[in-house]
Length: 122
Image (tube, rainbow, N blue to C red):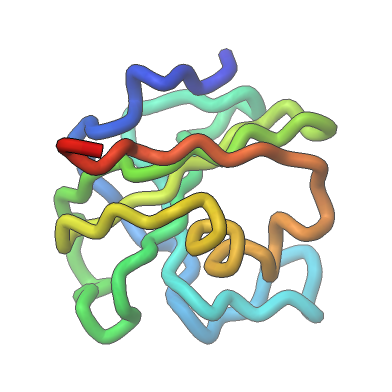
């Protein structure tokens, strides 16, 4: 199941399993500069929950609790088959370049495109 643009703007419940500063469980040379987690109750192409990047400032998120966020971007992986979402709790409307910069630490290893939520009135 590829993630379609209907996800953009959707409010979702998020759970953090890799807080900013943690190491990737399989690739110890990758440190997460932003919070990373998933949307409980969903299923991605790998059979696990859909993964998310949290684009809000690190200190703005209490990682001890689930929270609601808005999907502001979709990272379509072209050579991996597992798309990712980027979310915000603060009303952030990032550009493609801003999303690319935030997720580059991990997405640099994959061919991908980024689809962003359009700002109202633009």
